[in-house]
Amino acid sequence: MMRLESVQAGPAIRQAPALAGSLADQVYQRIKDDLFGFRMLPGERFTEADLVARLGVSRTPVRLGLARLEREGFVLARPRSGWQVRPFDFERFEALYDVRVVLEQAAVEKLCAREHMDQAGILGALTDVWLVPPPQRILDGRLVAQLDEAFHCSLVMAAGNPEMAQIHRDVTEKIRIVRRLDFTKDFRVDATYDEHAAILRAVLGRRADEAARMLRSHIEMSKAEVRKITLHMLHEARESAG
Image 1 (tube, rainbow, N blue to C red):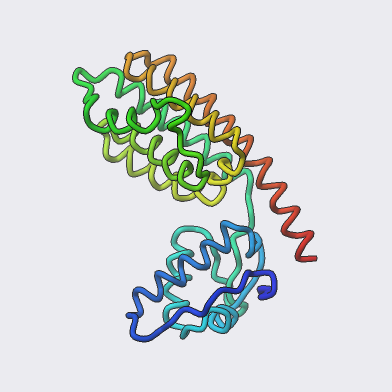
Image 2: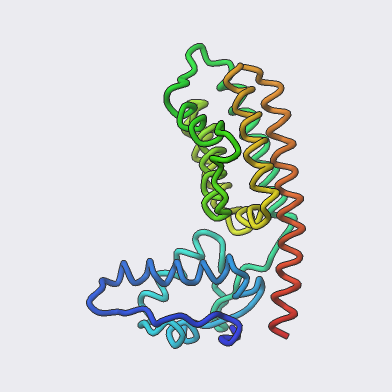
């Protein structure tokens, strides 16, 4: 059962006069924040009644929020025993990172081979964000995590294959819970700016092999950092809960 004391208590979510849909969205976001912050630990069991009591809402928005999180793979329904935070599986996450590498390398190769590269559209928007002088770089790790995700998704979209882009978005959603941890260290923010800029310049110069090689190195480095930080955060969370 979920240890309520291990989850940071916040103000109860107000039910009236909000609609059930918006309440479910709020419940979904609150639980997801607790998952991402390791305040609900991988493998931990809990019940709907636990969340109803903590969040101050009825069972309906809790069930809707949990159903959404289950579809996204963050929680598991356990018959006759409530719910469980999905146990952390490093092999699964590393496999998903490997899929990212394949998709993104294929995308930049396709993009560089296109007869007409739209440098004023998606690529222009990426240039505005990543090819800036160091004093103009964004330092907020949470925002940089969002921009990083947009960078990689945009590169795949720019290749012009909507099916590839959809598969990539699905993979991106599945690894988001750990990927954002890569931006909790200042040096990783700077490294991301440098690496994205180099990748983007290679793409704009149609140097497909160079762009693909740098993408692989960039993603592998991120994967290694995320694994290290995740292990550290899990250790700290279990120490404080114990």
